[in-house]
Length: 315
Image (cartoon, rainbow, N blue to C red; front, side, top):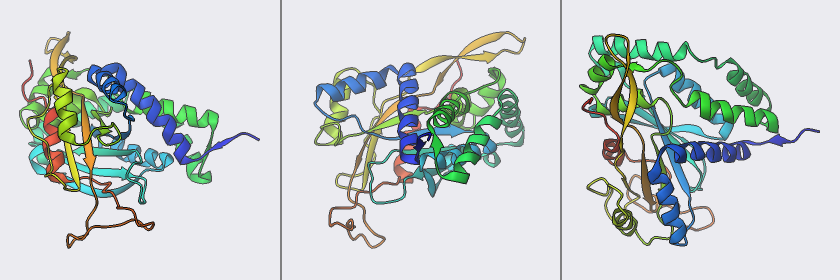
């Protein structure tokens, strides 16, 4: 009998594959891994985050995440960034489970002419990839609650290397400039595609006493950090991040040539999760009496983390 893989097992394969891809593209991630190893800590991947301008791709991503045992739980709005977000979670008491933070470019927040440019770019990307085999694997899971090993590998490969990327031609420079003039975060989303724009490492698991200590150590080895840590000391959630490096991105010039533009795409975040509280400020506890660690996100924190990758000027 062929072995069947449950969501937790498929999720482990996905995290390994997506993390390896991220490490290939983000030198700071490799440096952070070494930093944690040198500190004697454990490299706990708290969550990855994507941004996309295509609502159909967002819906497919959320549906596919259910195969990983991740389910949409909370919604977040960022009007100033022109983004609408949700978190995908393993519903339960364990905050250490891997999560995904999904952001959708809010097309209605853009002027109509820019909105049309974004839709045209999304349509070009969609026309260059066939997700039908991927959807078939999702349907197979939905019917049985598991996948065999070969199907799980095919599912993860398509998820990481086909769904989480730009599949069509480069974006036009004029589109990139028009979007960046309205939202640097949306411009970075289009330039990267629906890949992880950041991966987040847990501070305590990494062996540091505080997020301040870890951020200071990161700066001491040359990592460029956001100017402030988000979240007050002893609060439910504290975060900070490196600043995304400007990287050369292919763009289509007005004369049809392929040129290059500097965009900010990917960075590394660190996170310190504290004990959750209820609406009245009372601390929450697990069923076994241990503190219930907060596993969701805070809009006020996330809004500042978005600043780590925002292409506001096209060069």
